[in-house]
Image 1: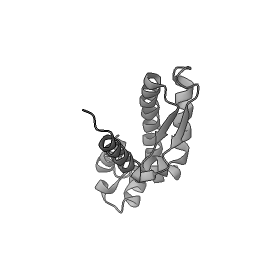
Image 2 (image 1 turned 90 degrees about the vertical axis):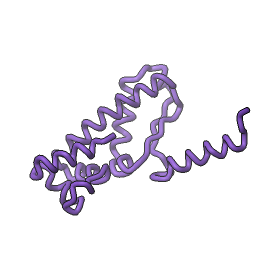
Image 3 (image 1 turned 45 degrees about the vertical axis):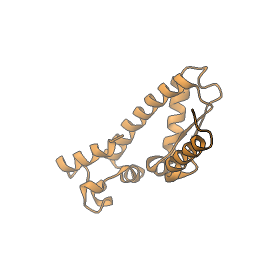
Image 4 (image 1 turned 120 degrees about the vertical axis):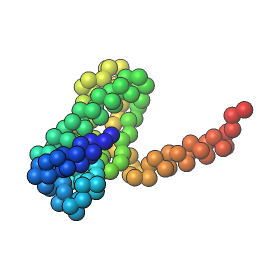
Length: 137
């Protein structure tokens, strides 16, 4: 998701609206990141709160599609945004359970990735090891 790009664009076009984001990013527009937006939202920054609200809605909508299609028992979210926004995972979980198909959320647990920033690398390594150990002919 490129919502931080929206923050960067706003910082270019209306620096006054993005003053806190710019301050947190050391004055460099290109340094505005997911973590910067999450940190600014924790202080009540209006732009960051708007971006986080838009992101939350988008994540809920996308997550519902996945949950409705696959009905997983666990839905695990991670990355800098999730780590920087402790309430976001709760909001996503509530949104999924409220709007997804009842059968798909019957036993669903929405959780934060325990491996943090390394979860993608560890998952890729596990997939590669599994394919190496059980090659398909």
